[in-house]
Length: 200
Image (cartoon, rainbow, N blue to C red; front, top):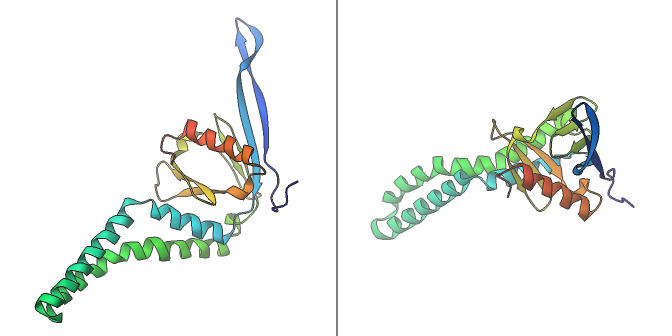
C-alpha cells in the first residue's frame, strides 16, 4: 500500500509490433519497459535540487577554493605586514565569493520562490518513460521528448535531476518519493543509465 501521498508507479511490458514482408509479427524478445509515476512537486524539492545542482558544478568548488586561498593569504599578510596589507586580499576575495553565495543560497531560494508564485511548477505531474521517449504531463501542459533532450542526470539522496542538453542551467526534478517501491526506482535508474551518458 502506498502511504506517501503519491500515486503508485506502474510498470508494464510493451510488445513491439514489427512488419516483415507485409506480414505483422510480434517480436517478444524486444520488449520495452514503461514506467509510469506521479508526484506533486514542492518548494523544498526545487530548493534542494537547485542547491544539489550547483554543488556538482566545478565553478562552485573552484570559487570556494580560490576564496579560501585568498583568505589564508590575507591572514598570513596580517601576521607578516600588518592589517593594512591584507585589505588587498580581502577585496579580491569578495567577487570570487559571489558565485558560491549565488549558487548555494540565492539560486535555491529564488527557485523556491518561483514555485510558490507559479502554480504550473507545483501541480501534480505524471511521468511515463521507456527507452524511446519521455512523457511529462500535468493539467497545464504535456511534453513529449526523447532522451537526447537531457545531457546529464544526477542522483541525490532525495531526487533525480535531469539536466537539459542545451540550457545547462535548466533541469527536471523527480523526487524519489514518486516511486512506490525500490524495484520501481531501480527500473527508472536503469533507464537513466542506459539512455543518458552523463549519469552520476
